[in-house]
Length: 211
Image (cartoon, rainbow, N blue to C red; front, side, top):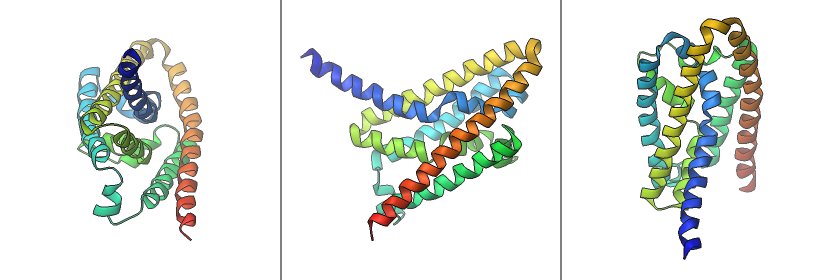
């Protein structure tokens, strides 16, 4: 009886952890370093919460509707989304390599709707959307949406904590922080580029299997 009660909770935590890993708050803080440095803690947290609400709504739609969004609504193959998303990620990775962490501000543009610009492409991406589809296949709609909510807002909480740590340390160690951000940002580019190539290859494999 106890095992039957533990297994659903374990599956729930695994699903939430899958999305949390892909959201990766440690990479998000690098993506948003220009926003971190410009905004104070309270407005930064509010913008993140707004972006999180947008992302949560999108993830829940994908969790509930699953692959039907592509096959029935868009009349497209999910592999096409993987290839396009991989190309977008690859461009982001290349910008990081050549311009450092501030490259993401170029990709976001000077959007007045900062929450929307953070939600896409920082939170909402091919990897997180794919994970949402997987979560929807594992659980009932309500449980799947709950896993999405937990993952998104744990990620936001961690980013806010990192922002707080940044604000506390920066006045005393600004040159060190700047160098660290530059190094971590370029290392992150390797991770982003690797994931993007993997997504493109997975999409191509699915396409080739049709022939």
